[in-house]
Image 1 (cartoon, rainbow, N blue to C red):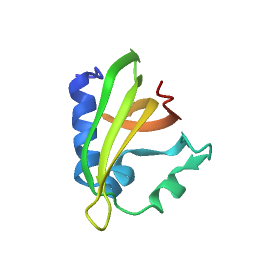
Image 2 (image 1 turned 180 degrees about the vertical axis):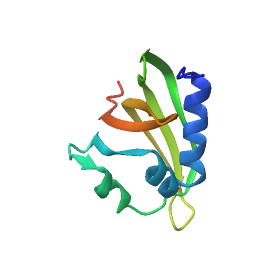
Image 3 (image 1 turned 90 degrees about the vertical axis):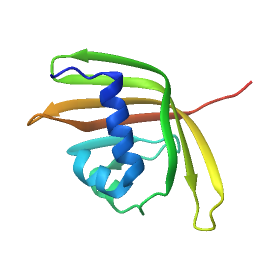
Length: 120
């Protein structure tokens, strides 16, 4: 099945939660471009330099999926709870649009655009 579904997104997020370093190694396309909320530009090499994250939970709320052939986008509020080295938990919530492309039977992470949420 080549459809990108909410279940596909859950499986991908489960991979990310289990081992963020392995996730980025296995899922980032060589031509990945990321635009995090801090305004910097990321590529695969830069992302792979990061440390493994201790992710407690991660989900995309208000998930919207659009697909055309082997391209899919997901958007919503990406909420992640991480523990730092002292065990303190921190929750981040960002607006995120992710682009995926099916290559050799696997959904690869092609692009990421994130913005901070302005809470009223």
